[in-house]
Image (cartoon, rainbow, N blue to C red):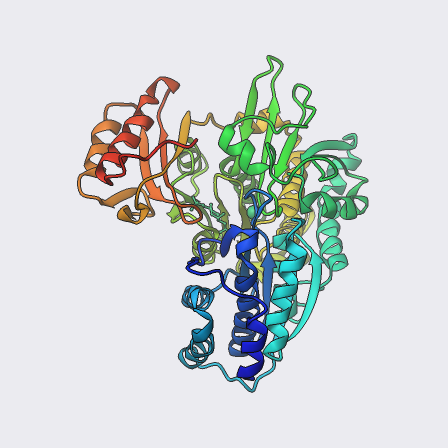
Length: 539
Ligand code: 16G
Ligand code: MG
């Protein structure tokens, strides 16, 4: 380690005085002007992680669905997964070290993690379309090179595309080719093969309206659309040519406001969807003939996908186990439908993709989705091999089903939830099953629900258990919630500190809209118990 060079370069990326940031649920996020030093340091850290794992590591510059003025960074581990928790701690230490302590912290991390400093390092970088992203990714590169690491800068990519690249590189092409062409070809080949049948049987070319949140999703869908255009025409809105990133549009806006994005022309019964700013989330929606808006969120996406996969498994008569992973935000109706009607086991984890991903790895086929539209399906190695074998050995209808399963494996981005890949999966399933968006929506009726964010003095006073469904502290809070909830039918409510913002989130659902005084009562109780009497509801 050339400590002098590190000190010299670090002086070009000075940490603002007193600024403390945390590697949160999905990396660092803050106002872009506060992040230059974090980017440089994450370049350094990626080199150490690469040396330690003897693998390529990814660094993605994005703040996802946050406002355009924000930015963020996260590291991607060798198989395309989120950074390991022990390294999240290293990331936080390094980002917050004062200039004079930087060398010591770097040495500490190298020692604690037993990094062989003599090894080579390779890092790949991607960035979203924010005005600040290009310069910030240069700071990452500065960090990589000063530690002698090699790198490849992919430039503009969606977050899941970078996860895919990292996975491809570390499996030496086993997962796919680590180029943008390789990604487009893998997905579109699977999509075209899957849907061939539906489309030749007379179904006209299908069309879908896509709100791209004025982000990277628009660029990448434009590049990709000619690969699958025979089966699906996408009409892009909020493509970044006029509006601001994530402003009044995108998956997060649509899900949290439960209304259409601005700038989208919706006719009744047309299928529409929204990506978020870095295209790792997707939600669908439509307006009915009375003009009423209907949201189809991650829970209903998971239901559609798991019922399709289960049907195919029944067809091939293979008893691969399938499990669905959700978070506390999953609508109670979806959990009931999956368990009681579809007879699929459902598990609940803490919020944040890494928790769901981890749990989903326990099944032959693990379907995971957050209600906000982030999710994918994981197939175990054994399941993949079995399905390949069935596709060769079986005959007629069974062979067809096995082939479909094989194409589904290729169509999912198993490295991360991916709006483009999920969109193609959903479009393929709807086409193959001949389902309209309304029929899909009618699988079950969501319980009315509300979400609020509340500012309190110290959100860490709230701690939770049981996958965030019950509050442990402050004392009395859970009992107060229980007292409220038991007055209503099919009701559920919980509070948890956010992992990405300095707020506490309150969620409640019940059998009818009239029950929502419950949410504000929870909120008042929360403020009282955290002594944040100045707290106010934000949304
Ligand atoms: C991040 C997470 C998302 C989670 C959200 C919760 C990833 C890639 N993204 O966006 O999964 O739902 O945080 O935010 O893990 P909150 O803690 O502020 O509610
Ligand atoms: Mg995102």
